[in-house]
Image (cartoon, rainbow, N blue to C red):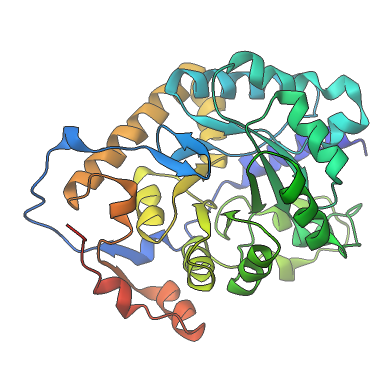
Length: 353
């Protein structure tokens, strides 16, 4: 099967399966603040990922590219929506374009449509420094995502089976690429152990890509004769992964992703320790069902709702959200307790003001 055909299959299966509510966001509750002592118009949505300054904490995460005309149109429309809402955007893995120059246009269109925006290139952990530089140059990217997808590759019939040397390659890229490098999981979550290893090798920005969003094990099983069903329930739920990563390395800038479908999910992810939140499957579904204008409206609505929620808990900045009390229940509480993370500390936080 061609790489182009496989990429389109991934999109179709992802839309067909949808997303679950297994990311852990429903286990997070805010403690009501009856005296927020602030106004809605004082909320500031700006946040930072290293030297990258984002106008809001949400960005459009990596989805596709390299799948011919259909992925060209998707990336074009996503880029238009990003431009009109001032939102950062990442492209899907560019390896196909590095191997087949005819696919470059499916990625380059994003920079053409969003010339002044923050744009992230994307490659897997098998990439060399030279390939990383080429991916960044291809779309004049402001940063680079390096995705980790071991479980997907193991489930994929034609997937990779060789994973040694990834840390050394990532460290070389981080040291020499010249733009911020975000290491991201693709839906199985990042553990505290993995976060610590990455930090020790120079990584400072981490997209945890937790369990509960697009399930690439299920997608790849659709393409197998003998199913590896044990991988379909494999992973760390998004909220638990955010807290694992931050508990391991407090200085790590964490991005929440994996099953984020609402503004409420985003604010819960930020309150759990993330500096930003990335959305993919939900925005793709919105684009294909409601068109570009519908996606623009939805992103705008999400931003407004984030500000409304921040007003309700009495914070003006994303940083202040990290200090509001939240109560953790259910499976997330169980997971964190078993992993030695003090959930009571989150409930007894006090805002710094």
